[in-house]
Image (cartoon, rainbow, N blue to C red; front, top):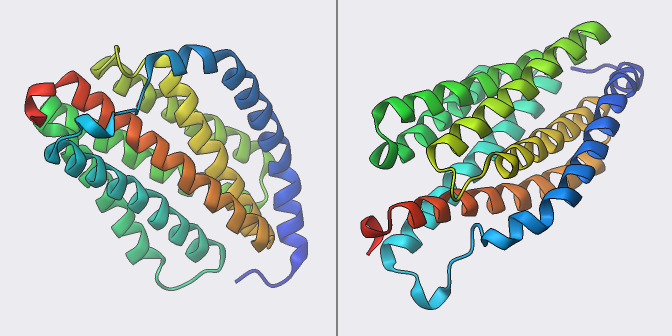
Length: 230
């Protein structure tokens, strides 16, 4: 358990610089990318044209990514407060990465699904490593773990873009993944620092963003494999 507010304040101060830089970079990249992204109509399906298979796939993809952020949040809370359910929560969170990888196997194959699971597992273990560095109050280790975590985010984005470059262009996917990481880092920082009101606001933003991301993924697969969803 965090015994007093001082450690939280020190952790928040150390990570605040990373968050400020990340937020600025995201804002700049978003401004440059917005016109290009909206021109593709990613994630948008006309309600009049949606089949039952499309609707079911759309909802299933949302469920997978909602599970991702829900179990991530629970893991952050358990980690921050040294709760005994942390191992079980982490195990469930890792199961979710397998579920997401399995969801793309019917379209991209077993090897691709396993690779996505592996990258997402690295995403989770990297987040845990960053939390550990933050809780230990080691600035140099925080920087190292942060760099590794964001590099993994780019790997995930590039993997997805390679699978479906027409509907998931690299720049867009990197921007979406970076947004997810920025928001999750903010959530963890506020939780570790004891700013629970901000922590809750962060989760609301994460939830909104992850649904957009899930919709981009489901729509991209539907558009790439239209015959599978008639």
